[in-house]
Length: 147
Length: 304
Image (cartoon, rainbow over all chains, first blue to last red; front, side):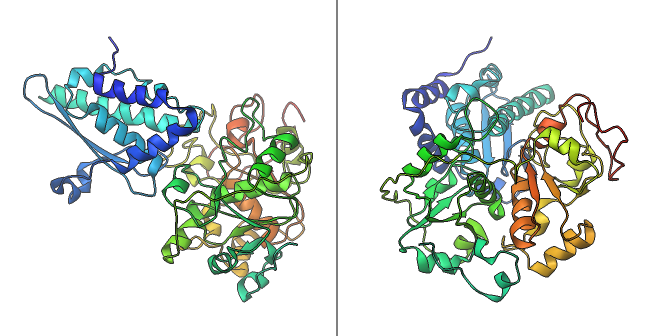
C-alpha cells in the first residue's frame, strides 16, 4: 500500500495550492529551514551516505530506532550553494522525520513528482529527488534486517 | 551604444577580448545605461538566495528551451523573453553563473543563435563575485520592458545536428564529458544521475577534453597560452580547424565552444546540442568504447 503520511501530505498540498511560479519560492523557503546536523554527526561526515544522483553534494543518514514501530530519524547535509537539493531534503526532513519505518516505506516512489515542480525543474533534478527518497528507503530496509 | 570593451593584458591575448569582462568591470559599470546583467545558473534557486544588484535571472530550463519540442525557443519566443527583461538589440548583455560559468556560456551560445551582437561573460562567474566579498542582494530588479525585434534563429554557423555530425566524421571532434562518460564506463556525469542513454562511449575519433580543464581554480578562464597547450597541444587541434564539440545535452560543450570560438579564435566551431543523449540513443551510428579515440569507420553510419 502506498500512502503519504499526513505531515508530508500537508507539504505536498502546500506546494500544489500555490501557483506554479511560487513553488520554487516555497522550495527556497524549505532550503533555508533544513536543520543543521547535530554535533555528533557534524564532526563525523563519514557516517553519512552521499546521494550521488543529486546534482549537488547531498549526504544523508537514516537512524531506525528499535522502539515499537521503529521510528526513523533523518539527517541531511548539503551546502548553501545547493539550494534546490537542500530544499528537497528539507521537505523530506519536515515531512518524514520521526515517522515509523513502515510509514516511510509506504511513501510512493514517485512522491517527488507530486510537488508540481516537474515543469520548473529539469528531469535530472527530479531524478535526484527520487533517488534521495530511494536511498532513505534502502537504508531503512537494511537497518530493519539488522535489527 | 554598446559599452566599452574591457582592456587588460589577460584578455588582450584572447582572439575576442570583447567577449569577457571581469567582476570589477561589472561592479564599476552596474549603473551604466544599456547594460543588462543576467544570471544563468545550474541550480536555478541560487539567484533567489542573492544576486548581483540589478541582475536578472535567466532560466536555461524554462526560458531558453521550447517546452514541447526538444529545441530552443523560436524568434518570437526569444523576442518576448528579451523584451520582458528590458533588453534591446543593441544592449550590452553580460551573463554570469555558477559552476565556472558553465550555464552562463550555454545562455550566451543561445543568444548567439539569434545573433545578439554584444553578449559577454563575466569571467569567474558567481563564485568569484562572492569570493571577492562583493555586494549581493535579494531585491528584485526594476525592469522597463523593451521591444526586442523578432529575429529568426540561425543555427547553421554554430549548431550541429546529428546528420551534420555524421558528415563531419573525419574532422576534429571534442568530447567535453568526464573520462568515465567518454570511455562508456558510465553514461552520465560522475555524481550526476543516469541520463538515459542506451549506449555508453564516444563518437569515433573525438578527443577527450573535459570542459573544466579550461577553467582555473577561481572559475576564471585560463590564459591563452594555457588554453593553447590544452587544445592545440594535448587535443591536437590545428588553427583553422572545423570543430564540433559535444557533451550530454549541449551545456558543458557551450563552455568549450566559447573557449574555442572567442578565446582561441577558431572560426568554425559548432556545438552539437543533441550530444550524447541523442547519439547514445540513435540507431546505427558508430560508437567507440574505451579510452582510445578510435577510427572513423569507412562507412559513415547508415544515414550518411
